Length: 279
Length: 270
Image (tube, rainbow over all chains, first blue to last red; front, side, top):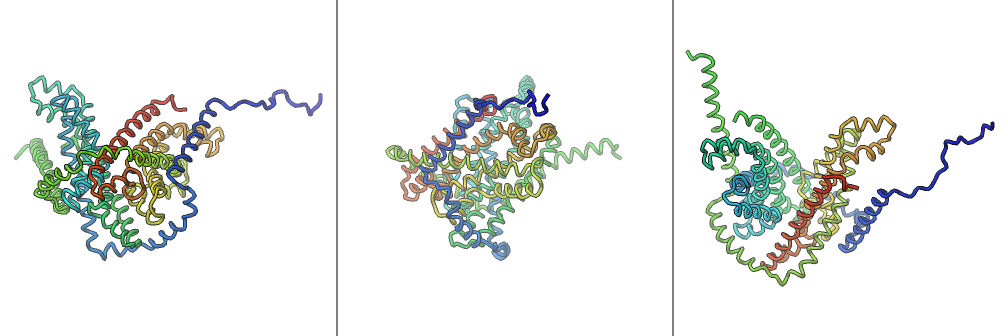
């Protein structure tokens, strides 16, 4: 017996056609590439600009460095801008949350006075969520003028759309047993809401409230850029006069502020939700 | 002397009264401070409401004749979001993998987490303003701003999802000698793909909204038309742009809802 004999167990490579799954994935990838190229061409989006124009980005970075940190203590008006931004987010969240809670009782199937009203309010929430925040601000700027008040109103209206749907969904998902229980002892509609529904949705209202505050803080900064006052306004001002070292200092301040407030609201939420039973 | 069990009862009764009062007081103080900060005035609100109704009257009736010429810009807005979303998804994939505790070494994870956090803290509009300052107006900075804007949300969600993968799944692939890339390819991706895709679709919806907003600052599309009409005081045309925007966003929401449900129900994911 020859030692060089090839063991019979080694199969000769046979061409196997690519599996259906593989071909399908390839087709999806190809379609995506074709679409991206076509859409990019239609938009005159030139990805190579990232390479050819890279020196502009470098130059901007050079102009921003080093950040003029001393701005944070040399410019006193900055403190009131920070306070203004936080206050805008706070008021927008509280006012929007209260209005949303009241409206969500109408928008929830199990508490609504009339199904037609429910549809109407739900549609209103949907329309509000579809409207970009800055659009609401543009109208408000004409109505009440430039400044933080217009920002507060825009955030309030925005929060109603965001909260309203969440609250109404939470109310519709409550356990019906407590409602029936106190209904059977002759509770009025208001008593049912107060003693059977509110206690059940309170944790979700509080949790969503803190979440909305985080969202609104960022939105307050963004709205400021459009003329709503606060830090965003300062930033846009610094950008208009091309003081990029100030811009970077303000950006660092914004990042610090948002991160800090997120920590604070996280801490408070955990404390409050941990002790709702004792309230 | 009061028996101890009654004393404690009375104390808790007092606390039960005191606590809501304290909370209400704190809340009232905070609201009062915030109201002063923001120069809230009910008189201004009342006057503003009257003025607001007058202003709103300018917007009606919407200029229906402008509708056909607004379809083009609306399409541009969709395209902006559609090009930005895959780019953002690809970027977030890299960042998400790099930021997951059970995959990436700490020298990679720490900066990745930091960058994700940094991006999350910055509103998109600021990123766009910086890019516009560097590169000028146009769709290019808009698309890049939207793509970068996806990293904060999608990257964080992906990293968190990867960290929640059952360690036994990863170990079982590792014990048969898989390399890091094989682990990612055969254990991580299949585990997180449905939720990642669902989030990516949701991001597309968010990007449509954002691209309307970015358009107002010069990225083009329906947002640009809207802000142009507003600054030219062509309110009826602006209203038409608003209606087109609403239809666009509503449509995107519906499509994204349907797609997400399909993806999350699984099975159709191949």
